[in-house]
Image (cartoon, rainbow, N blue to C red; front, side, top):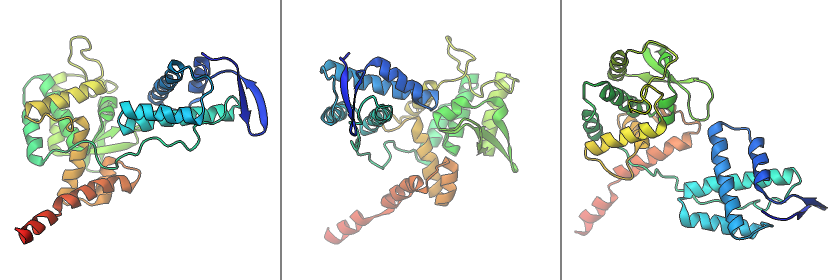
Amino acid sequence: MASELTVTSGNAVAQAAAITDELARKFIGFIDASPQSVATYKASIRRMLEFFRTRNITRPTRADILQYRDALKAQYKPASVALHMTAARLFFRWTAQEGLYPNVSDHVKGAKLDRGHKKDYLTSGQVKAVFSTAEGTDTASKRDKAILAIMVTAGLRCIEICRANIEDVRTAGDSAALYIQGKGHTERTDYIKLAAPVEKALREYLSDRGETDGKAPLFVSDSNNSRGERITTRSVSRLVKNHMRAAGYDSERLTAHSLRHTAATLNLLNGATLEETRQLLRHTNLNTTLIYSHALERAANNSEARIAAAVF
């Protein structure tokens, strides 16, 4: 893609290979992360190299990185921009460490992220309406009801639903529990409690399905192409969205992740402490949980009504 480059690193000057696809492959091989994270970085680096290629940039500079960031901002949401820029910074930090190319991305920022939530949550009444759309007697309806119940009472992510196996349904204290492989974890060290109605929904689904192998996926697909196989995150997202639409709630701000927000919000509204909610969502940092608290404080703030009463 480019000719040989002269690279300056400190006081040393050396001939180094260009920023090529081969160099990108070496970087990807260097990354020590989960397969999903590696795939994400790989896609981001490919996007950056394509940006350079289409502009005939053979010696990327800090100005080129800034231009790349601005191009991302024009096309993607802040969270995606931040992700792509993180990959770019890691790549050039690695090339500098290896003496291959200077770190031209040093101190280049990504995109400012809104600390608020991008998705809405459901009220308790709306949750009941969504549940009512999964009251069928067939196996698929029982599966969907169990998934909805677990996600809305325990705040599980789609990936955590997909990773679960039947043998992960165990006990914790005096409660039925589901041990989960959480975000960024490689083992099932966390668990969520299964409230009585939730456990009942799950047991009814498993009984109807008739699977006895503990190593089998907890939830499986019912589609013609993948029947009986582990359900995918895309399928979970789609089934949740379909039930929301069936209940009359069709909004871009309502997705499967909204059920996680719903769990946190309803927990706080019904007397839970911030620490209890942090444990429920398995947040490492309490500040992440505080976002929910601040949102509820604002919702309970009736300043506008007080001012309107004084004026009108």
